[in-house]
Length: 308
Image (cartoon, rainbow, N blue to C red):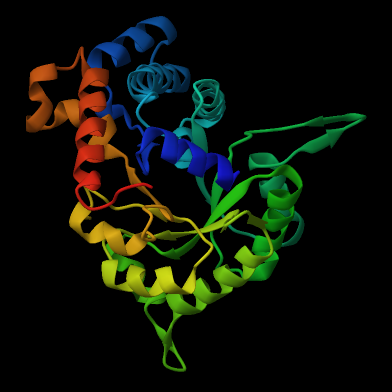
């Protein structure tokens, strides 16, 4: 799967991923009102508002980007209707030719981890039929339960040509409470980075591995060290834009040929119409504002990173 992602990054000349992480406060009120009129003040109404919002944004930006990253929790908060819209969003994005990174941050052990891996990336067997659940192309995984939690995902990566991004150094301000703690003189995130590199060797797909790493744009100095530790892993880079990550800090995440990383923006894209910079679009043209925000993001990154 990583080879497919790289092909699309090269095709679009854009190492960017749009995070589809909606909240009701992000959605134009006219859409919310329409869905409440159709379904009442219900979980179904909220979920359908998400769907309409996602669909219009995806239609507006799909020719510009290689991938999207829906955050499952935003959908799960609305119960079964939300989960159904999550899967519908995954399917629609894949129909549009986009790689889907399921931001699910799963992490457990044994049969539970195997079930997560099967549900998000692999298949389940029902009688004589193999069926897929959410069928994302990649999933984010939490390594802090150790190899027991990762190996079921590695197995699915190999059997189904899917990929994972392991949480190594996350972009949130409190990540250092645990990730920066030193163990015998070595920060924990570096220990996790080295182990991720070892897992990566077990699932190679050409020059790169199906096993990538999540490293926040807000920590470029740490990213520089991790880039060297993870020669075969793609780095998923959250934290650009709204969280404070800047394009000028991004080159350390990439290899010299402009490959090796993909940069995420969520609120900066899907909420663009709410920003003063794009206010001229207004609520009714929110998707056009998102398209312009993607164009601006790509141009911003291209000043510092060129895909070859």
